[in-house]
Structures are given as C-alpha cells and as structure tokens.
Image (cartoon, rainbow, N blue to C red; front, top):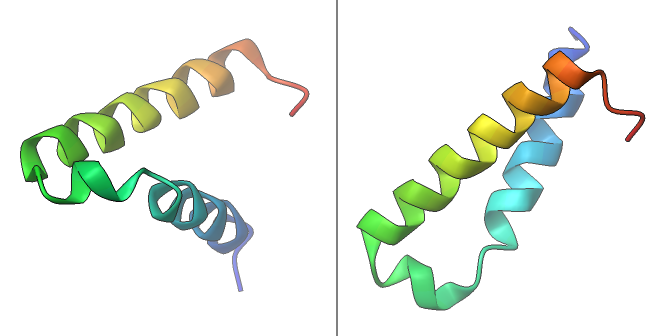
Length: 50
C-alpha cells in the first residue's frame, strides 16, 4: 500500500484522541480537524523531524 496510508492512520488516531466533549459539538469537532490539517500542512512545509 502507498506510504500515505500510514500517515492516514496516524491522522485517524489523532482524531480519535479528540476529547469526547467536542463530539457532542460537530462544529467544534470540524474546527479541531481543520486545525489539525493546518498543523500537518505547516509541519510539512517546515520539514518537521517528528
């Protein structure tokens, strides 16, 4: 499988770790996902060592 699958699994894990309180507020959850996506993009530009 493509390497992106592994990265996708990590993203899913991060989503699963979002506090359940946000799950009752879809808007907050979407904001969290969007913020995470923005962080991943910024990390890619900075070539994080993570």
